[in-house]
Image 1 (cartoon, helix red, strand yellow):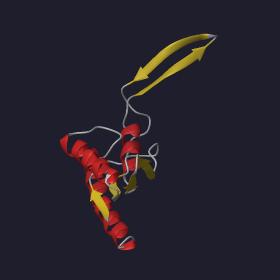
Image 2 (cartoon, rainbow, N blue to C red):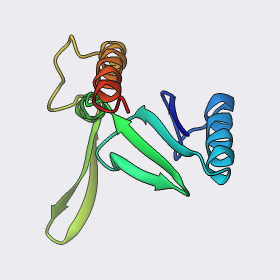
Image 3 (spheres, helix red, strand yellow):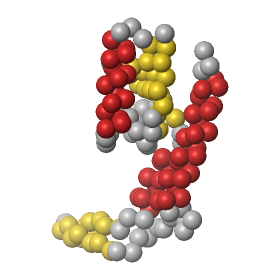
Image 4 (tube, rainbow, N blue to C red):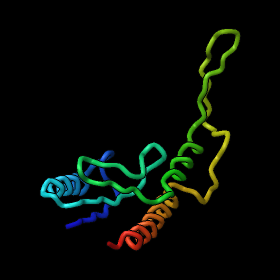
Length: 130
């Protein structure tokens, strides 16, 4: 028997009740010999697209998460260290040197991420019907 679970967030990372229960249930099913795959949202460049959590296969789909991280990075206050004659002086400014386009607000990026996740999930399930 094979089971596939679809959830927005999954281990590792911030876990609430749903995420914790999904992990516990998938681990329990895998110990009973059931092939378990968890399909979840890809949260960024540092997180692998596919990995194993014990005997549970984790597949991360979607591609908009890195764009949200880039927007956060572009909109951050600029801070740096100015080195002059061997002495380091901390400089900071509240005005970013580069700013993300106005339409790429965090809310718009999150909505785009969710839609892209849904379309990616449909594509994943079509490719893996068996």
